[in-house]
Image 1: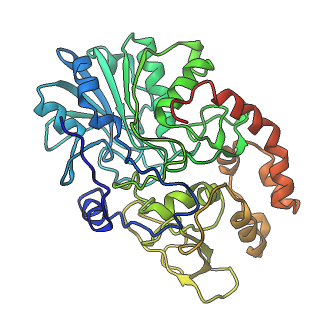
Image 2: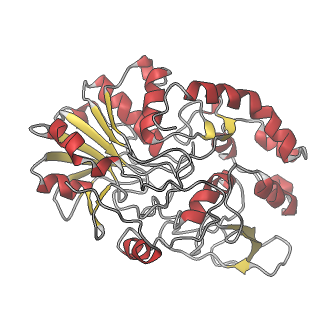
Image 3: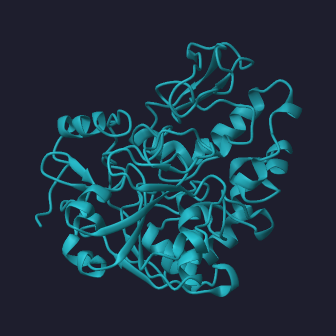
Length: 403
């Protein structure tokens, strides 16, 4: 099967975005920040010759969403549709947070359903159970995982992968991962998760920006004994071709409703840390994850009013005029930064209202909130996670698949 290129120019990128789960407008980026790979990445899903023989004659389950596609010269087809056309016996589909079509709000519970196009059962892994049950696994011979991740600990697709690996190991079902590039894979940064703060937005002791593809994460979860009862999942990884961790990769399909473009994905680690605070980060606008603000911020030239939209049915400060900081033209980030969080905290008149009950689980520790409240500088805060971060970087080297 021919492998195709969908990244030739901005026009094609825009057209692809229009037929994805929402428009995905490409952002201009400063190309000198990260070296650009001349040969374009070929995702695992496109390498059908490598994995079709592993699926033929098997009862197949697929963990997928709107990003699970095989690229073609003009557009793409969904992996599920392609496998069915190739006479692969796809039995059921499992959907992560945001649902099979990437339309649900962050954190919204997803119900089981049927796919109107194929008639397949869509089983939610963000509803009554986040881990496939033994009953859901019993009629499967093999599981396929193909979801575009963005390389951040609290982006829950890797939490879903963790649970899928456990379920596969416990039910003796091999797992095939169709790997995809990590658009934030060019750096590793932020505090490492402390075990006491383990949750679905942080399952394993990795930094906030972990520098792994989903395939590499699976290898590390197996190798470090992170799966429950130290079970080991039988994993086959179809690697991305023509990819290194310094490859600039623009996503042709937005991976979730509030990551509409490259700029939002690049800013996501440093802005979704606001989860668990009172501040709005562009949800309810067309520039999600590209600004932050609140009605009580000092008046400024930049303002916006959040309204209900896809991915934010009821955004924070819905219908209220917010003043804030526009980040759409900021330089490309090569590290996680706390400067936006610290600035927002300083601009909030009533400091007692700034942090909510869920902030610590997103931070992965109970100290970051206290550090900000005490007035520590970003440089001093960063020093407190350096030792754990360096230890993680050494461990990570045992599991990476790409230089």
